Image (cartoon, rainbow, N blue to C red; front, side):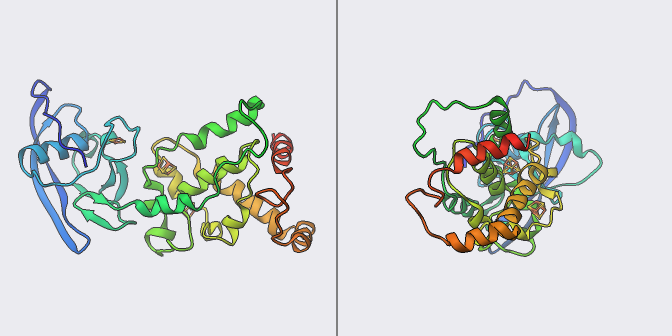
Length: 283
Ligand code: SF4
Ligand code: SF4
Ligand code: FES
C-alpha cells in the first residue's frame, strides 16, 4: 500500500464536486462511506481516492503502484464491475453513483485492498518453462513468436479472476485455476521450445478447465485486451479434448500411463518438436 503523493494544486479545478461511496471495513464487514471531493479535470478514480486519503481519511487503504495501467495493483470494483482505478475517469460516471469496493472474489484485507495471494499459490503449481536440452538463444519462427505476444501482455490485475463466476459465485478456488492462469498456461503450452506438458494439470489437477463454460466475462474486463476465451481457454480445451477423448490418444495414454522416461513430460524430450509441428500445422 503506497502513500498518497502530494496532490497537484495547479491541476484544472472544475469548480464542481463529486461524491464517491467507498467501502470502509475489512473481512469481518464494513459499509460504504460517502466522500465529497472537488472534481479536477481528467481525474481518474485513483486520483479521487488518493485525494480523499490525503485530505479526509488518512487511514483509507488502497493498493497502487504505477498509476499508468501497467502494474495491475489498483484493481478494485466500481459500481460492481472490476476496473483499474487508475484507468477509470471520474467523468465516465457523470450522472451515476460511484461506488468503489475491493475485489470480491478474494478475502478483503482492509477498505479497497483484497488479499490476492491465492493467485500466486496457483501460479506456483503450474510447471514452469522447460526448454529441455535447447540452449538460448532460441531460433523461433516469426509466427510462433507472434502467438506468444498476447498472453505476455498480462499485468496480473486479477480482474478476470474477480469476474469469473466459477470463483466469484461458486468459490471453486481449490479446483479451478481461473482465466489468468489459463492465459499463462496457454503461453507455456504454445511455446515451441517448452517441453513440459500441463494438460493433466488442466484436466485432472487443480486447473479445472472443464468448469469454464466460455461465458467470455473474463475477456470483457481484461484491461490489456487479451482474448482470454478465444485465444487461451478454447485452444486449451481443444488440446485437453484431443488428449483425453481421442480414442487413439486415450489408448496411448493408458499404455504409457504416467510413466516418466527421463524427460519432464514422459515423452522422451520430443514434445517441443511436436509443438512446433502442431503450431505450424494450425497456422
Ligand atoms: S469464460 Fe470461463 S474463465 Fe472466463 S469468466 Fe467465463 S467461466 Fe470464467
Ligand atoms: S488476463 Fe487480463 S484481466 Fe486477467 S490478470 Fe491478465 S491483464 Fe488482468
Ligand atoms: S496503479 Fe498500476 S495499474 Fe493502476
